[in-house]
Length: 363
Image 1 (cartoon, one colour):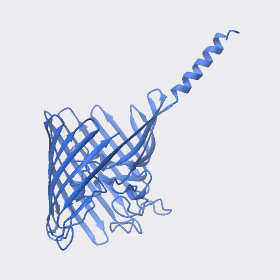
Image 2 (cartoon, helix red, strand yellow):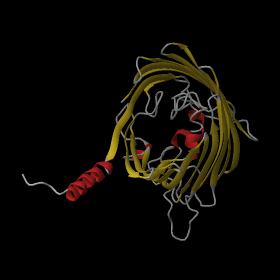
Image 3 (cartoon, one colour):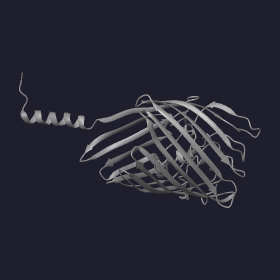
């Protein structure tokens, strides 16, 4: 056999190494979470309703793909494609989008991560560690349906962490292109020639996370345009949220609290409100965790206030599979009509009690 010259052999090996170096590592992951819930006063006649929840159980169901390619010198190309679905019927969530939870590509280095596409904005990230219930069917997300749906279409985002200090920001040229209705699709695609303000959105976050505690503040301002939902039918109309959130660890027990100040300038006028919440998460036994949360939304200059109390018990069979049960109550004053279950219904001014039980598996 003819010998391969050493220089040619070295070149071949370098080429092979470069090919291996350039491979993209892709992970497929997901959650299937289904729950049965029963709530009272679901209509004006005071009737109760029992159903398999659509939007969430303890966590929204999803399937996703994330990947990265090492570009060398500490730089990587990264992406995420994540599709949400309703486990009761199997239909796509987030206004019927194929990848409604996330769809972005970016670059990542020691300086942070730059993203372009449909991304989680800073309001979504702001409450992640202080809200002990997260996107549970009964939670503060029922009071403000935007919170678990705080994603931005047509966006550029940055997120960096430096020795516990987190900084992040997003800007969107058209915050929500879907027109299917509901909190995940508000018909504001933006990117309008001659009106750069139409459907624009800016969010920002500054926070610190340590071993014993963490705190962050966030800012979110979004604009409307003709045809947009929520009374934001003009690019002069806006919805602004400022959050201050924190948590503290007492051994294995977490305490979390926050306040969300909102100002909505819609077609019906200006509405201002404060949503305050406090929660505790405590491991009562191996594999068994108790989470509890209370919250109040105070609508300034109005009697249409809302109070909530929820408790949830979760047993983990493994790292991937868990069962859970929850009880809750939502009290509505004045003409407030906030349902206990996210996306549900309640008669105006009526209290609503609820129970639910569910099963979750992650893969």
